[in-house]
Amino acid sequence: MNAVMHKYGVAEDTDMPVDENDNLGIQVAELRADVRHIQSDVTDIKADLRITNQRLDSFRKEPGDWSDKLDQKLESFRKEAGGRSDKLDQKLDSFRKEAGDRSDKLDQKLESFRKEAGDRSDKLDQKLESFRKEAGDRSDKLDQKLDSFRKEAGDRSDKLDQKFDQKFDLLKKDIGEVKDSLASAKVWALGLYIALTGSLLYVLARGFKWL
Image (cartoon, rainbow, N blue to C red):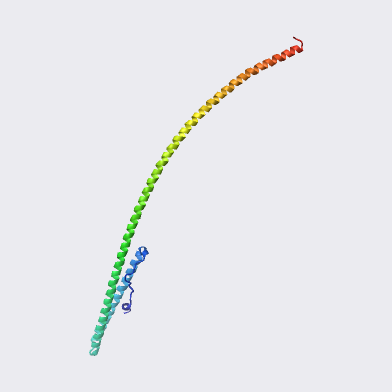
């Protein structure tokens, strides 16, 4: 009989918490546990009725007032058991309704979550596509800049080659002029040497009175 008197607090119109999407497994487990408790209570009531009927059947065999009293008690017990059974059925119906409402709310939240996840996925795909396009544009611009830099570097290299050739030609010309100057200096030095030698010989001849 203790199982019959056990009361379960089934709160109606209870709002689900916002983060219950993450606890779907826990909620379903709790609902199953409540259903098992209710089924256990119904089993206990049926067992009590069975035992009472057996006792009443044994008492009916005795004559007299015992049979009437037992019939009255049996009728009272059946009435009480019927009332409790009705209340239990009402609680079961309320529990099933509440479980259905919770299931509907969970389905709505899951659907909303899936839709939101889909929207976020679409936005992410758009951002990735935009990033790829921007990266492609930047790559094209970089290639253009590299091509321009290579062309400019080639032009500068050609100009440097031209300047080097001009400098080299000037250097060759300067070297030739230096060589010509050295040749002229050699001729001039040779003439000066001859003149000095002649002067020295003249001085010696005068000193020795050869002249």
